[in-house]
Length: 140
Image (cartoon, rainbow, N blue to C red; front, side):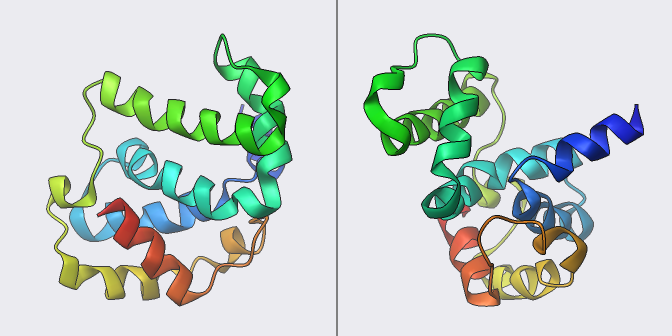
């Protein structure tokens, strides 16, 4: 099971999701699944310029009724919005501020996320500390 999960992660462009989720969980003791959900749509939007075609390929398998004729960018956008909506529909917290993160914590979190090099190296788009901070601000 762990090997299959590792293979799936290695082939899915969500490495920065996990890298940015670790400080949320590590500093604020937020469960890992929720930490990932909080940053997921924001990282996917960041990755979209490099990974839209991959997200568009996944979209119709994850959600019914996605119009695949909208092109990779359109399908990718709908996919990300549906993922974000799923968290809200499930009653999950959707903003970092809702789990005890203050805006002044974001720079430290961005610096901590950059230590997750084993994950960031597999992200489809290079992530700088400034990028991580921007993603956290979007999720705040």
